[in-house]
Length: 224
Image (cartoon, rainbow, N blue to C red; front, side, top):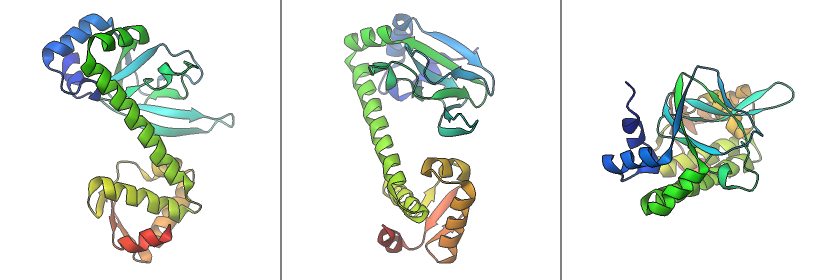
């Protein structure tokens, strides 16, 4: 039997919650859960948004679909992540992007009205929700910085320097695939790979499948 409480224990919305408090949320929230198959659409861009979604199991993708048929994956969310919590409090109240299940997944949905009701009763939940919203804004700000680079090299340098500051290490763990990185930078994957390999040959960085090692920190800073 699936343990919902265990899945919520690692969700930032329930930071510093004990099991009793999580159980109280489950009782008060009138939640519903839905199981999705890999590739199944959870929500379509422009649809009315009345619930926040909590990923209990699996991975979901935030996508932008274009009239040309091209689909760009903006982000991937795993266990412990939430979607819809930003747009649900906006004036539009619609999904800003399409959400699809990248693997088999289980999603908990909680109605906005119940979220607000519980926040009024539980300051800890309200604080965690506000922190999540703030972090989302900061992440969007970071992505705008990456996109602000005029050249692919500048975008790469901005990305590496940001993660260097976050991880406090010259050997940076890269969670995104090259394809996902390219989508985040707004460039093609071959263009990104060519520039990364060129930077390696010039001694700026060293490359591995899941890591990029900065070999010339000051040189990266001088590119900007």
